[in-house]
Length: 354
Ligand code: SF4
Ligand code: SF4
Image (cartoon, rainbow, N blue to C red; front, top):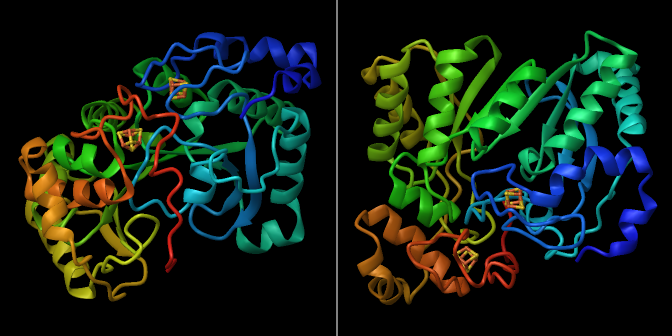
């Protein structure tokens, strides 16, 4: 929980660029809360907090800054310990002066290890970087004072307002963009948020900022984001432009879906086949397939309890897992949920991490 004294630890200039957080509407939840005085929105983050930073060899190779907190509550979250900060009580780095972080990032990129792995940009990830946008803009500004050519990647779940998206596109060199699901029911059941703003933003980037698009990333979860969903997402992409780059990621059991089965090799190959059939030509998959799992014994009972809220069978399956943790609002909608500050999903502790 945010402490007022934290604000006094910030210098005047810093407070100025964070003024926007006094009426926060950075993402599509548009909470309008005053994060500076300690009011919290869906993300439950006050002032920007850095979780950790490291050189990262995954393309695009970078110095990655993982920001704490997220505006989604995905059942499959791989970074749940930082995404659900501060509820997870994870030890994180905390607020870092943007000028210092900019300098540190450029030094890391230019270090012998940075050069060895081919790091050429600062990569903002999380959690969800959108909820820290003014802070990130400040880091970029400071980094480009040191080196005007500094490249930036923004890694997002796509739930930005159009205004925030346009701001991101002004400073970012590349963007990696997750599409969690196409069907609104499935998206809500999996993340707690609707799919429409994400699809709108994905389309906007494809049409207006194609040069900045690194790739769309789609996590394949058997029985939830499975062939039918993949087909819908791919048709959506192909109707905009068949040459859009798409990377399918293998689901590994995680967080609330800790006992669930991972995506198989066969399913991943099928996914690429489906994508090609819709006309997409720049498609690949990555990750570690074939991790076994099982469904809980009481699963059919759980599904019955939420069946009237979801039309889609796969949404129902995801929602049953959410219900198992204690999620009370169905269809899941964290923006209107009166448990958003005591969310049982945020407190879930997985017993298996793969
Ligand atoms: S969820 Fe979004 S709009 Fe709400 S406080 Fe967080 S960043 Fe702001
Ligand atoms: S309990 Fe409420 S805030 Fe938590 S995941 Fe469910 S809908 Fe979202």
